[in-house]
Amino acid sequence: MPQSLATPVTFVTFVAAVVSTAALAGSPLPDGFVRLTDLAPDIRQDIRYAGTRNFMGHSVPGYERPACILAIPAAEALERVQAHLVARGLSLAVFDCYRPRRAVAAFVRWAKEPTKSGETSTYLPTIARTDVIRLGYVAGRSSHSRGIAVDVTIVRTDNGPPAAPKTVAKNARCNSAEAAADLAGSLDMGTRFDCFDEMSHFAHNQISDEAQRNRALLRRAMKAEGFRSYPREWWHFSIDVPGYETEHDFPVN
Image (tube, rainbow, N blue to C red; front, side):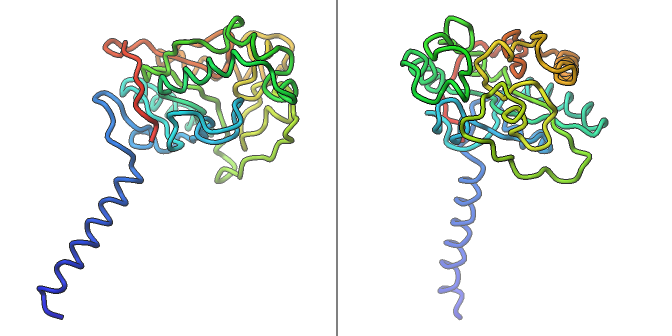
């Protein structure tokens, strides 16, 4: 075939490949932010707000892809936590990282609506939806929007590749043993992620001894690299990073 005919085809193929790669990689991030897969690809990601396995029951505004994005110093600190855990046959698994402001606003709107039928047996086992703001589970501003907070747990890595997520009954209470194990290989933390209940409080004393030990292990590992825990949510940690005071609204993609 003459080169004059082959060149355009080759060029089109090249452009298509570049566009495809860019789409997979997501849009460029603001300065100072990084995708966790670029820094610590071995940390498991189960970004709940990009799908339907969350308290809203649908993907949350601003989550275009299931990706963990963080302020670079926060991601580097998380990478160091991971290195310590891997040596013990364990790994971090993240549920949420950077959170757009539009998602925070959607949470607040949701919290101001009346409880719907069936919610008391899932993410709201003991309280009404309209109580989640007063009790400190949802707020109008979030350190997640600054890229300095992460929702995280610990999973085992010494039994081969991670299994598929467990199927949990739709009406399983988030503070039940069944729901708490909805992430394959996860250590028992006493409740499911985003369980709006006192049992999610870090120091709650009515969870099993094993769950208390696992929560303590998670907090020690995170605290060793500068993260602070949130007393009402065993999974939430944030780190103080100078220069990251602005709350952002770019999409997760």
